[in-house]
Image 1 (tube, rainbow, N blue to C red):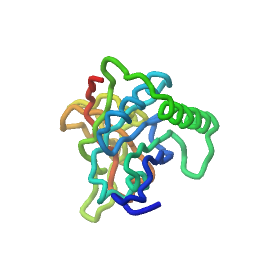
Image 2: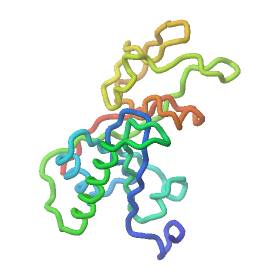
Image 3: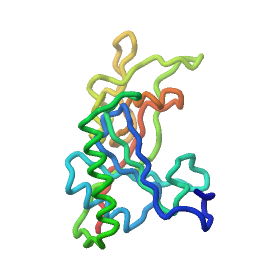
Image 4: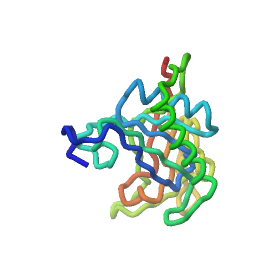
Length: 199
């Protein structure tokens, strides 16, 4: 498919992922691109439960398939256990991919107004002991509440002894909460800030 930044790089890759987190269908953009944001905005307005997630990163350093192309969108769908099939998610993602391709080819009109987006700011690990063992789990009040507001004083983890750990950080909107594939990466959740982009 060609190296990054070469003449052989494809114009666009739609990279399909599943997640164990309750993120619905999330369109992840690795770069701020007005045309892609416009297309994603149309999809977010047409399909219920679709989020736009901005994850700015240096393309030459990114390990993700999509960054081989000049432009990319990662489509995350969940919650879905890895190695399983979920008919509802399958058909929804299929519809979104087909609609995406229609919008690219169709010379779509620009969306007027503002669109809600979530920009990744940082990752948070689980509490751990000195040996690196996890000592707490995602609190039940936070589990499954991806893209919901988390404010200081709200419970975020619960220890194996049942003791609550309260959030002491900034107001944010966590995503990838309790993602199974992220345990080995030391990520309990990714924090985002909610913004409205004028189109």
